[in-house]
Image 1 (cartoon, rainbow, N blue to C red):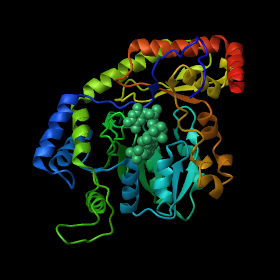
Image 2: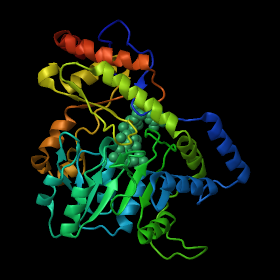
Image 3: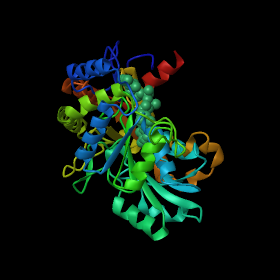
Image 4: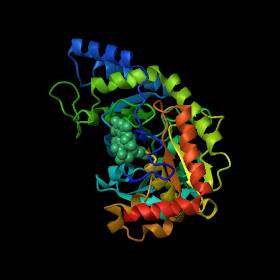
Length: 398
Ligand code: T4K
């Protein structure tokens, strides 16, 4: 924690504002589900709550199959293995490190391709230069819940005989051209981690319209068991527990309320950040469904006269625990940094965007007044860059 407040003797917020504070739609409903679960004494292994959660997700997304898992990282690993990916897979570096790890964990080489600086998403124009005879797939991430350019990626995948899958960890409740994310590519993987729009404590889901893949994924999630005592496939333990499904169901039942809060917060940020020089709030397409779970601000240092890192220090000093997702990019994290020391040469936009982005708190634990104050802190900082630098320099020496 940064030691002193910038604009007063005490931080603007007496307790920290977090990015990713969990959304809990309805405590009583969760407890109801949990009590029934305890009475049933069925706690995991494809219980009734997991089955119900899977059916509701599939219906909500308009996709044939949904298999819930214990988290999205394991979900990605299972989906990647079930789809038979090997060799090299093209991925963005501008994503959470789990996307790359899910490949490397299985000794598949993640080959990092650059992003479109406007959308922060894998740029189709930057993919083909990375395709080699060892490439088997493209794994895109719907960063911030903004959909990948699915048609362009599918076109490239088809032309080169590659598979196409998506890390949809951020994208529950988001759509592209009116179609919900969940049914694109061979499979998509959602995260229901505590910090996500729809949370099940920990959890995730693999969704697909492919019957064969769905069958394999289901087997792999449960050690490869097909009925009692009959293992027909290599598998792992990727199962979602009943208590996680109880939380997931509760939040799915209350999804409209969660959406309304996130939209309200986004609008409050949009108003509050208007005309702060050098700060741009990432827009969401109003014609599509969007969960607005990430409040993403880009800092143009040449206009704001403060760096992204200086602004993050200011926010932390005021107890606003803004994050620098996804800095410094997967390619600058181990083992990728050592394995591919020159990857950055092909990732100019990734490096530029990773150095500019601030993610601000949102969700049901923030009020509109909190948001006005967060925006006020940023505005005041940008109005007084010299003072901010002086205070930061002073606090660095104390
Ligand atoms: N693909 C992508 C694109 C992803 O973004 C992620 C996860 C994955 C795959 C893998 O999904 P999972 O396997 O996790 O299902 C957090 C989350 O742990 C991670 O799930 C998420 N992406 C990532 C973007 O953010 P950290 O390392 O930043 O977490 P942490 O502990 O710093 O928490 C974030 C903030 O949330 C903190 O300020 C504290 C607050 N928080 C957190 C938890 C867990 C709470 O207030 N309450 C809580 O219960 O990774």
